Amino acid sequence: MARIDLKQSSGLPIFYSGEDLQPQGLTINGTSTICIDDIRSQLLNEELNCPEIFYKKYKDIDKDDVFKNQNLRINIYLIFPNLAGIEYTKTFATRCSKRPRILEIIYGGGTVLLQKYDSPIKNKVVKTQIRKGQKIIVPAGYTCAIVNSRQTSNLIVLEIHDREYSPRIVLDDKGGMAYYIIRKNAKQEIVRNPDYKIVNEPEKVEWDSILSKYGITAKTPIVKQVMRKYEKFEWIFKEDSVDI
Image (cartoon, rainbow, N blue to C red):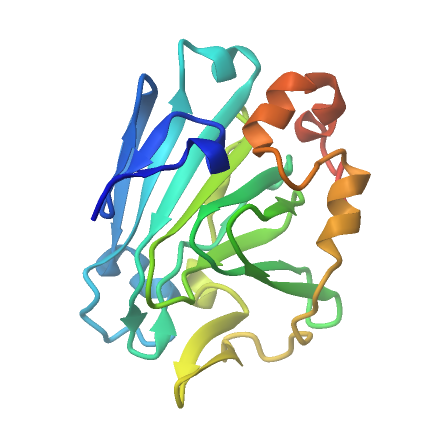
């Protein structure tokens, strides 16, 4: 396929070849390829052997230390379309306990799951269908997984956060998130992870009003918004600064 220019959606000079990202004049601090053996402990069916590759993570993208000097870290996730049995391909469940982060969908679409599980009585799960251009704030303390629940195209998601507080992989001991996104009878469904005996039903949130509250506009790439109006985004560097 022809190369796709992602600059308009990401705010960064990046092309997409169909299989890989091709940054132009940017530095990448490292790339991780997450295979089925890596993420097996967070799958609905741990006995599977395919697909081999779930996603790639491009870490700490920068240009002449512009983002580093602003104490920001930018990562990009490239999630391939496939099924692991009946479950759609996804990222690890990750959590940052001290700072929020922002996700922006720069290509494709899918589903984002957020959860904060303190106890069977006190927990919250948010399910959001995502599309190109959409932005989501992941508050501190919330766990996040990104699911490519479309089978026809890759899903590319940009993540920006305080570089001193990177998200960590969590929930291996629980089989991942409280819910799995699956394909059943040619339809997308959500099913509970049996390791969570009691968990609330997934809910929706009104992202437009939440984003507006924190100074995020819909059309401009989040990288440009943060760099142009840095003082408006002081909440990125503060603990417990976001509520959804």
